[in-house]
Amino acid sequence: MSFPRTALQHCLCALAIVGCFSCGDCVETPSIASIAPTSATAGSTELVLVVNGNDFQRNSTIQWNGAARTTTFVSGHQLTATIAAADLAMPAVATVTVLSPPPSRPVTLGTTAPTTSSATTTVKMDCVGGTSNALNFAINP
Image 1 (spheres, rainbow, N blue to C red):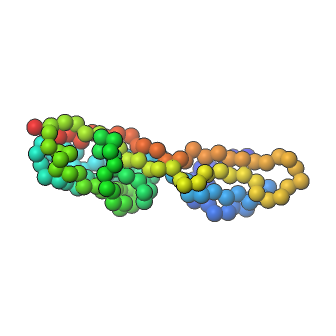
Image 2 (cartoon, rainbow, N blue to C red):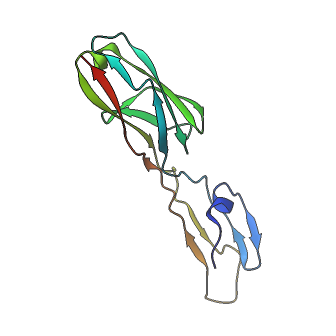
Image 3 (tube, rainbow, N blue to C red):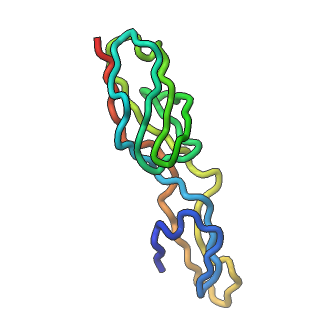
């Protein structure tokens, strides 16, 4: 038995012929489409980095060279973070990613109604959060 992934992402209880299936919120791996700005001059003051993409969660964080920055959730498609002047002090290329942690409880589906058969249906979902693709931010001399 298979189920469309989108139909299972935010279900509380979906009745089916074989029983009741339930799951928690599915946290998919985020993806970054763009960042703004894409560069700054070394020695600049702090700036607000806007990250646009998909599958952002309220607890997603913008990572600057692998270190979390205080992140504001705007929507499932946009996050912002303040990049400190210390991060912009020297010429370099910084890597920007987004991390969405996995759900606090496992996401599994299975038959929960009593059955007279030993057969059960279990659906495993690949929605455990993760780290997005990376985009580069140039710190120019």
